[in-house]
Length: 281
Image 1 (cartoon, rainbow, N blue to C red):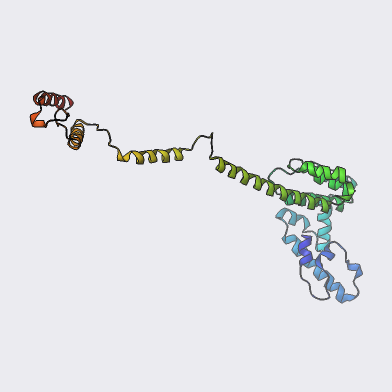
Image 2 (image 1 turned 90 degrees about the horizontal axis):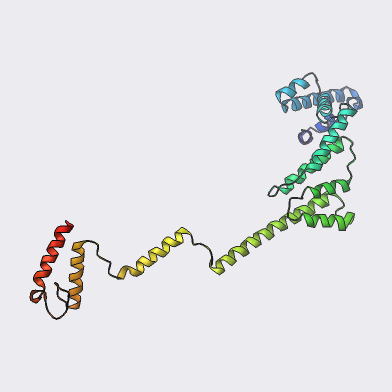
């Protein structure tokens, strides 16, 4: 909300909305009735902007205030844990526990995770908590314990010391750099595995079903020129006649040297064929 108020456009000679809300500029600092009216008008306008951005429950709580500076002070003390020393201490402990337990899961967005940790540090700084750069750098690096490059970060922190990673911003830059490098290495490794499998021809692996069907079709196409085996009795007769005609054999006994009309076994074969045809029917 404060960022929105900071971006709110004001006229020349007026005060910024965020300065009025955080009381950087106060009513007592105005000079003359004209400045007082202008200040109060802007303070009331900031109250409308703040209340319109809140939920119904929060809006009811701040409706008792007429000015934005009063609303902002109430919200800051209530939700930033600055109402009293005890609330402030407990809020600091909660934020510290969130920082110390923060961990980036594999595959998560590194930049969003680091931004989350930086926002927690800003909240602690607003509560006047002691937040040294060394402590923050250590927490940022330890939150990367599930990443493949964690050992490299730990080595830089332990051996390089304060000269290598002296500020949270330097640690953030180093973590993002190592994460980008890990993504590139993973991509290269995947491409090498694919090219190696293609070069070896998938030897020793079970062929997929589509490949087996293709191979069967190829075998069928190779054997298409060969005569297919007849299945029915009529097809057997036709197939035998065709082969006898090609080779010049007898249609009855299928032997060379004579024709069907001169076959010595003509009568016997005719009787046999007739009996077989009756049995099949």
